[in-house]
Amino acid sequence: MGAAPMFTAALFTMPKTWKESKCPMTDEWIKMWYIHTMENYSAIEKNEIISFAATGMGLEIIILSEVSQTEKDIYTISLTCGI
Image 1 (tube, rainbow, N blue to C red):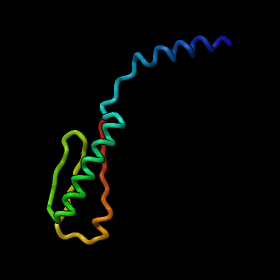
Image 2 (image 1 turned 90 degrees about the vertical axis):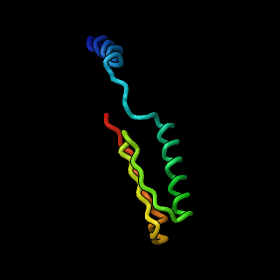
Image 3 (image 1 turned 30 degrees about the horizontal axis):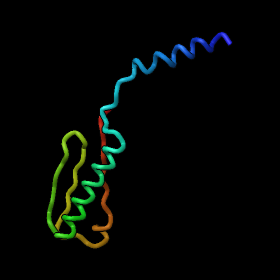
């Protein structure tokens, strides 16, 4: 029973020392994924070449005009953030 007060005190002091994450919130990530997915789909439909990188997100997408149907169906977007 003697250790419980120390544990409770640690729980209340920890949030004061936490630093807020530099990553966007989950709903912001979902919005970004949706926007980039729609841009990719639009480019594929128009057979365009697009290439862009979003600063700070580590996001890079390259779509070529000559890709097979299998390649059109498979795209991976990697979002990374530095914590």
